[in-house]
Image (cartoon, rainbow, N blue to C red):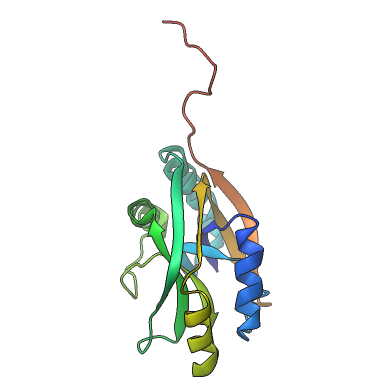
Amino acid sequence: MISVSIAIPEPFADELQRLRASFGDPLAEAIPSHVTLLSPTEVDQDLMPDIDEHLERIAASQRPFMMLLRSTGTFRPVSPVVFVQVAGGISECEQLEQAIRTGPLKRVPQFYYHPHVTVAHHVNDAAMDRAFDELASYTCSFEVGAFRLYEHGADLVSHEVRTFDFDRGPQAGSARLS
């Protein structure tokens, strides 16, 4: 099983993971803080070279962008999840998610795509309410310059397989001759 995500950088990743653990989420230590682009998906291992090429092409066509995380949201009552909202970089996430779900990763999504960072899942209502309230004023921003491919083993831990860097264009200070 694989997934593709934008990793939340430090110091925000550790902070959000620590908070997720404080709400009693049993997967807090197994899943790094991230914004999902492709949810865990079963794939034939023979397709991995094609999937790598597919993800390389997408990353090479993407430029870095700024992401803003701000405040909380929830999928309740449909799904027992509290999250920090992606308030900036939404369209870039949506475009990446759509591009990734083509070619060897063509899938019909189970739910409408909504970029977010989960901070409480598989916890009781009181813990969900606490997560929602405590992170209501949370905010951070950072540059996104890559996405990552993860494998999910029997241990339920997300293991990073590879980072796919975006095209940064001409390097500052370099010149091209015509």
